[in-house]
Image 1: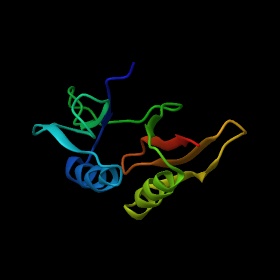
Image 2: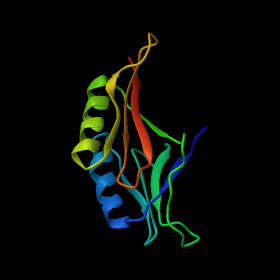
Image 3: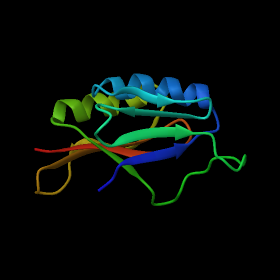
Length: 123
């Protein structure tokens, strides 16, 4: 099972602000941080999302095909998180809506560093 996901950033302060505001929509807040790393979670015992300045000192880059998925408990929260990401300067990668017939409802976006995320629920 996933414990946490870490995304590299080239603008630590902007990324911190983006995720502070974005993840507040689902009740997550900072629970670990240093001068290079911040992690957010709804609870310290649940999976978390973090940002980091790359250890090797090189620029952070995104992976093609790499995506982080955030689970929420309603379509309204999917809509709210997706809209908040775009309002904070994220880029749309697929509007919130149903995908297929399984009850999967998701919205896709990229953060300020170009990392791809989605927010979803099973309706």
